[in-house]
Image (cartoon, rainbow, N blue to C red; front, side):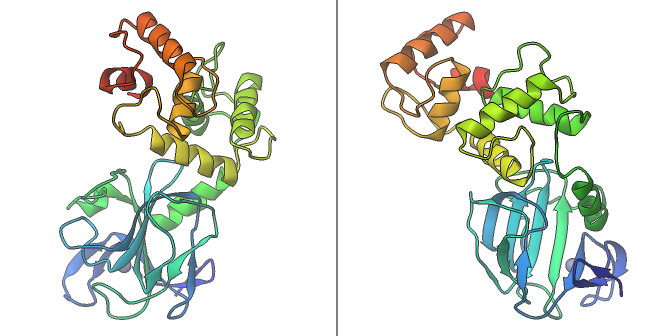
Length: 287
Ligand SMILES: [Zn+2]
């Protein structure tokens, strides 16, 4: 059968006769073979949502050892039936990074990689799984081919990927005061990208490539869920993001000055003024 990036495609995406049950089913991914225990490299960058054995009833049952990745388009990429995994939940991974080894764990007839793209991102069961596999998944090969076309975002680009980038930048406190999320990568966006790269100790080139994307993924994942009260004494990346949003010095340490800026933010946004980032203030910041 056809080749795809060094793999032999042994079963395409779509309707097929299932090799075990012999009934006609919808194959929700593509089956790819190199050789047993071949290193499996991530097709794109992303953040690991789940890594390990997929338990029955979690949306990952039957898939054996899996790595589930959230990519920059906010889709889930599932690498299944792995012999073993080499990454862990929460980890940011780069394109071509080894995430595990080809195997035959789960419901299979032989060693292969089942690669699937799920439309819905869920950080917990059922992890974007829906019984209607046809409408809840994408053709993985077409998806990856298109993914590569817009691998870089840079000045002069426009469209939905740029708008998503701009929304992410704003959410993370890199403001776009003049044009906002207008979907056009102009000077203002480039300068916000440079600020982000500088703050994250990345190469500062104003171009959104794999490293910048992976970092953006990591940070937006961080603000996607309320972690509990953040207040005087709190530390870390999430504090730095909040500090940028409230115009405090972004040093990652929630001190008196940050508390004052949070109070000012609360005042401006008609919230209860207590200097604490509780659920309501969090919602206003990131909801
Ligand atoms: Zn498969």
